[in-house]
Length: 400
Image (cartoon, rainbow, N blue to C red; front, side):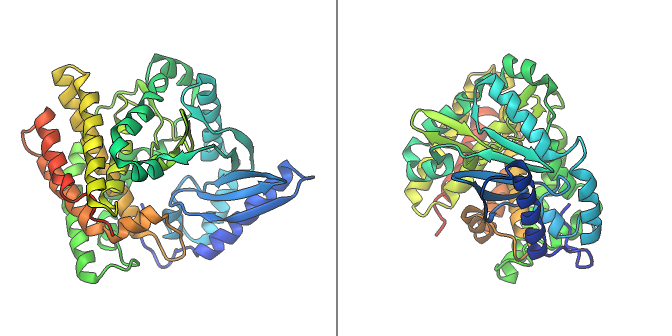
């Protein structure tokens, strides 16, 4: 829970300095005879990420604080700075270390062979180093080629076929799941505890939103959360399918005919719905913020086409159930990222897309509120999908 707590809040500048030192020390230990240059912190609300040049090779360094998001740490969810530092010393040596699990899962995925994932360059004292992948990310491609949205999403999901199928389930039986990135898990940690009301009331207090807009956003999110909590509890508890877990467009790189994936958060689920939901949901946010209305609408239409095709391949009853689960997961993930960005404290860098999301908070909160209301009704299957698309499409491309 990213509760604002002034008595335990951690300084972003101090966290940055200490993390850079930890990364520099780990990289120097791995390559003592090479020249090391650390880059600036990359925008991230989860782990600390920065670029590192080792001689002439540029790597990506990732460091996790207690397995929590950076927003949670900075807001005091891990306690005082001294408490965080003491706990972190134990955490980086534990078998539960998030970056160590990610490194192992990257090895499993490379053994599976498809999807192609980034190479691991090293893991030392909590610091995971991976090599750069070629190409441009899917978020850029979707924004630049909105008329090809369906094809781009389809080829991305197709690349995960082995992971989602029997081969992935068999090979990844020994994988260590990264449940900290579970969409439903994050949602319930944020909104199903005694501090949820305080957390909701504080959303956007450090943002540039006018107070009347902020209060409207808080109310919309509060009502949406009350609807989504029971819906999220109804999602199947089966665990027989491996999912990539953090399938954002920014984590997929396209290099000609080849796709490369970064930042896996491998988990077990009842089906591929979590991956589909995150991919289409984050793509919808790009559509909403597109500077060209027609392009935004093309993206929404392409997203709807991809969803419809996936659901049409299933038997009727199963199709309706899975569509509903995808829609619930999409709403849950959207509320998660919206609330996280609205909770980001001063000094924590956000990506341009995340900054846009804060600026469009009222629009996004309104959409998830209206769509969650649709899910309380009797509509199902294609009719439900059409109604959801209608709610989103007229708003797409409203970002400026």
